[in-house]
Length: 61
Image (cartoon, rainbow, N blue to C red; front, side):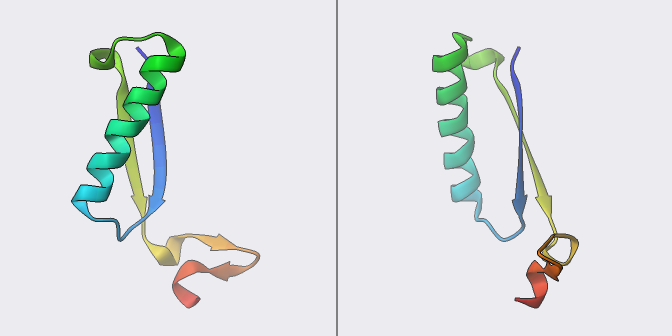
């Protein structure tokens, strides 16, 4: 059973997350030869103030 974790900054709509889950599931199913029913996708959302690149928080941009 493949398990995929996707980390995103908060702010995506339910429709965007639904589409992401569908496409990730299809890609993993196809490439790993796993039934779609066995593919698990976990979305972890992070607050913008909890994510930084190059010493600057995303919330400060």
